[in-house]
Image (cartoon, rainbow, N blue to C red; front, side, top):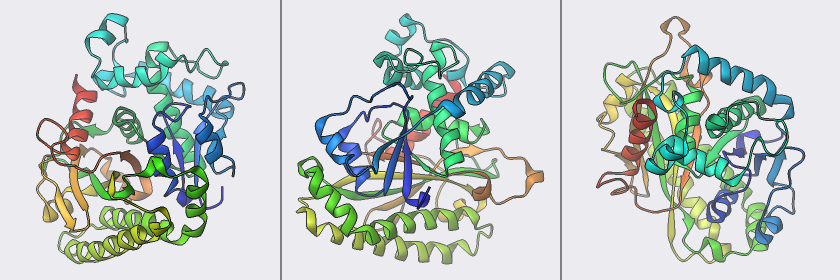
Length: 359
């Protein structure tokens, strides 16, 4: 696939659950793929169909060549108890779903199973219904790696499951100095126009074409920042890396916003979250490992936080970014403070992972 660095795979559902999220994502990514069975026609709105006319948005990836092998692997991992997360240990009975509607596994089930997607549309799913939503996140993770696509979602519950699978269950429920590696979050704020849904598909497509360089620089600067932090093994050198990142990300974000002069922007919103693994010693030099406290990188709206601890096999001694892909999450709001019971967006993600593992 051409320019896979600037292309993404949407998950966990077939239809785009939030049109606002899709419009915002279309500002950034060259191509947005989704997993669609061959015998199923997505139920898209007229506006989404118009946005997809160029063949760059909503591109179907058929799961046929992946599904059988992936589902067998998924079931084997479930039975082997290699994954010990609580969300993977039980079944989603109706009474449980009604009682615990805010649980991660129930949120995922409601995203997919309640809509009737999955096994009822072809024979491409081979897993019990109670694990269907979690399987979809596992399948998306697998496909994104095989196709070299960025994995993006608009649902924190889906992000939680796919991140757990991406690290093969080697995630501790809380960031700690006792863990040699930490799953870190880089948050970028205010990159989406508040009037995004007033932008007609034709104008959005024109922006995508005319401002391709600015879009690429923005996503590239954020990704490069995460890669440099993940690969930096020296806690002293990290301060120089940190200064470079502040400058590069701030300038790219400034140019990206300026490039939207075509769209009559009325204001800004949106939180883009990029997860990456980093050494605990390096991250501790930059910020406290308290997930409720974000470190502000620049005045233009970039922050970092620690989400969870990672356990890796020491004998491998490979750079973490060579082992693991990044994962992305878009959240359509402006404030990362007071997002969860008086705490922030980073803390909310940490709690989501903690709940997935323990509750």
